[in-house]
Amino acid sequence: MTESSSTKLLNGDACRRTLNGKNASKNGYVKNHCLFQQSQKYRRSGEKKQNATHNPSLYKKPFVESFEETPLLVAVLTYMGYGILTVFGYLRDFLRHWNIEKCHVAQERDEQKDFVPLYQDFENFYTRNLYMRIRDNWNRPICSVPGAKMDLAERVTHNYNWTFEHTGKVVKDVINMGSYNYLGFAENTGTCADAAIEVTQKYGVGVGSTRCEMGNLDIHEELEELVATFLGVESSMAFGMGFATNSMNIPALTGKLILQVIVIDHVCMRAHKIKSCRKMEANSCFLPQGCLILSDELNHASLVLGARLSGSTIRVFKHNNMQSLEKLLRDAIVHGQPRTHRPWKKILIVVEGIYSMEGSIIRLPEVIALKKRYKAYLYLDEAHSIGALGPSGKGVVDYFGLDPKDVDIMMGTFTKSFGAAGGYIGGKKELIDYLRSHSHSAVYATSMPPPVAQQIITSMKIIMGEDGTTLGTCQKSTSADRLRQLSENTNYFRRRLREMGFIIYGNDDSPVVPLMLYMPAKIGAFGREMLKRNIGTVVVGFPATPIIESRARFCVSAAHTREMLDTALEAISEVGDLLQLKYSRRERPLPSLGWMSEESLLQD
Image 1 (cartoon, one colour):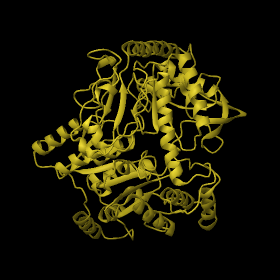
Image 2 (image 1 turned 180 degrees about the vertical axis):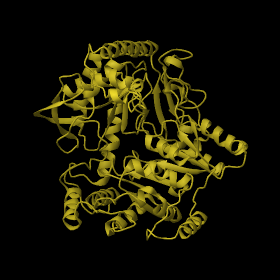
Image 3 (image 1 turned 45 degrees about the vertical axis):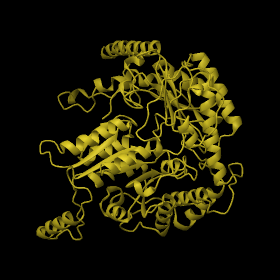
Image 4 (image 1 turned 135 degrees about the vertical axis):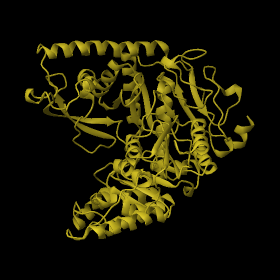
């Protein structure tokens, strides 16, 4: 579905990533995308001129994203590192084959050698020989609330990360820089926790049924009404799992029609069941066969899975590149469906609000303009942006000051900013009514647990300012204070990392901060060294990222104090010097010019 990030267009045809990080003019230049161009006297000498957008008047404030080129030497050394690991991997597989080295990999039994293999040996090559060497950086057991600080259960391995043993010791007060706790609602005391406890005593923990049977509680309906009000849409529907919200609802919207028959009696006549099927097919198809999905190349796996399960035709456009999207839209309108060339019945554009690996924000005003121009539909995944962006915390739509009605399908999760679990879909009432009876997540999945629903309700009311109280855990702060604190922490953390000389990806307002590591050996080394300094981080490598773009991903929270951030930054700088991670060639940034009005920026 996606192509390598080393060749993808990021900010238009005039600004390209070239193979191996090599730049056409000078390697190591910085690629920024800024909607409003500042005058020449403010432009840093080491930056390329940014590519202009379709219509700058669509934006009400500067839109700045930075993706610095991979230095050529770093790219070469990264490929060499993977090459060396591959050679040693084949050598170790040879030793395992002859029982010289003990093999921990799942294998077929001798009596099953002639069967179709359950385990693809070659496909697990990366897992055996690369991932296992640094596996200790993932799945670390947490034994406390994953708030601004957390406690980790210590573990050791005696067989090179194949298995782990717990020592019984606990690593206390680890600064948590990896959880999606954007607004600091991951807590076990305070308003949200007290409300969840009260609901647990009233309803219990589980429901034990689906929404369409005996699992529809009044608290679920209250939640959905509140979500619709918060988003500014007609109606909404809540689901118990965020991943399934995408993967199970996209097929219901764009896929081949799946007939759902409720059989009341096992001895019903077959003719009666067929008649019911035909009646449902005639009246319940929201988006029939012949649909086209246009998907951003960096969309989340849940969106990719949902698009594939739908059976619709899928075409991928360059990440956040409006020229690429418009070209696909034009081709779809001109050429129609393959072979028949009939017009597409529906065209669905699928994008995210904040991309969790790049830290970039969707250029939503331009996407909506293209969607209206070519009569397409828009599916917006706000998993990371809802609660974390916008003056009111209402996501990327609020961030750009747009009308929620311009987005046909608004999706988001409660797992990040709300400190809970599950997801939602919001839109027109006809859309939600259709999903209630045709979405697999609605028909077959167990209802959301009442304490989880109450956690969402309480935290959402706090964000909306409807609780009438202040929060006891996060420095006695109001909802506006949390949103402001998150924005200040994000800008401060990003600015300090750039000043230190690290290569940072993404938008200046994104709380997801990727720090580039590149080389495979530095993935594990960075995570281990940070934990030694009591900082919990997330490191990411291939295949979750392009092979030469391994990174550490920090998630900034409103619960982080300035002292916590300074402690983390000091440790990051120390480890960066130790591992030589300060690759940036950009000049030291000038003092901030502050926000400028649209008119003055356009005049400059």
